[in-house]
Length: 260
Image (cartoon, rainbow, N blue to C red; front, top):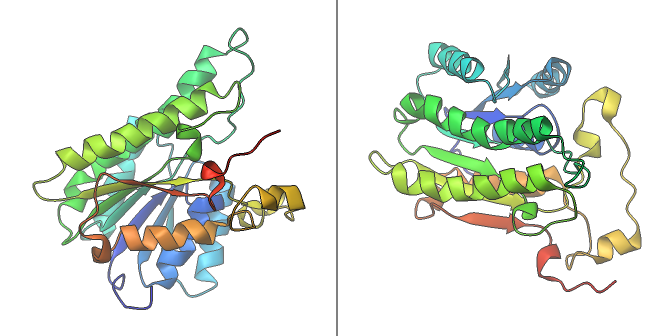
């Protein structure tokens, strides 16, 4: 975004230490925002913080497990002690390993944990961020869901259910948070390559075959920057007439018929 909209704005990104979250954190900070990264991985969080600070970007890291109500309460208290308001909340934190084995093998505790982080977490963060969001002129909540909310591979029960629930939570929040207005939207990413955006111990060099690329009408796999650019728009006043919507960003993959 070429303008100065995000100057003096504060953006909180959960799960902001790696992958799509880190890509968004860097983009918002470069656009002038003060960015608060939360993550339950302290190693990744400290590395992300250093990455942004080395670029002279305004950032802060707070350790938080978004599935814990006590953690989220403490997080928002810390944010409120340092910042006058919260202009944007991006609910990005999630457990992203989708495969759980067959239904007969399903570990119900693991299923519950995925829903606790991926669905309960955004609800808790939205609830406890509300007083800070209400202090902003044009506040916005952005939920990061997945194209797996609309389509499935076998044995991905928890991840698919949680992302589908988050899609529904998005429009439920949007029609609930109208006085004062807090716009709530979602981005559903498709295949996003996060290898270069992981913490040092887990970084890898992407290797994509021609078949991988050909699954996407745009001819490539996505990157965190693709999601970040849409997030910058949706959290700004340029998107002031958009709420309760989910935008799929997948290079066209989900609209292409593939026969195997």
